[in-house]
Each structure stands twice: as C-alpha cells, then as structure tokens.
Length: 126
Image (cartoon, rainbow, N blue to C red):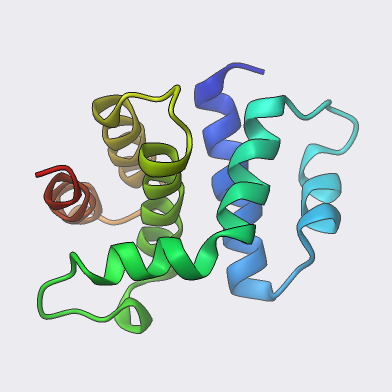
C-alpha cells in the first residue's frame, strides 16, 4: 500500500469513526477486509485518534470565523490527517501533507473544500 492509498484509507476510517462513532480497529478491519494495513496507515489512524484533542486545538487556532464544530466531517477529517502529518510525523514535508489533503478534498469534498483546507493548513506553517 503506497502512502497516497494509505492516506485515503485513513480518511475513510477516521471519517467513519467521527461520523458513526466506530471503534478504530473495527472500522479498519471492515474497510480493509483482508488487505494488510501499512505502518503508515496505522500511524495516521491511531496517531490522529490518540492525539485528536491536540490536533483539533491546533486546527481551531487557525480557523477564522469558523469553529471546528461547524466544519463538515470531510474537511474536519482531512484537516486532522494533514495536521497530524505536518506536526507529529516528521517524515512528511509540510507541502506534501497539504497537497495530499487538497487532492483528497477534490475527491470527497465539494468545490470549495480544497481551497478551504489549503488556507487553514497554510496558516499553520507561517
């Protein structure tokens, strides 16, 4: 499983956890079926899940005229993954984390999702 695919799978798992209140292990097993999880996928899923309070606070500090509670689940989940990658996973350059979040936003969000995510994440690295 390459890193891009792992990010997409992590998004799907974390989305289901946030949206349906699933357990991370159960959600991962259901989504992957018999496909093996990569270390990177596990790092994203469990890293975001375990550091959610700190990650959410970092995101909230960079939202203008928005609160985390008002964000759609797609944008919130993508921001969490990218924020985790940028500040907890030292192997991912900030630009890569931002780009990957924007690409996933184009697939799963609406036409404004990518621009919104780019704006919030870009503020974090200034």
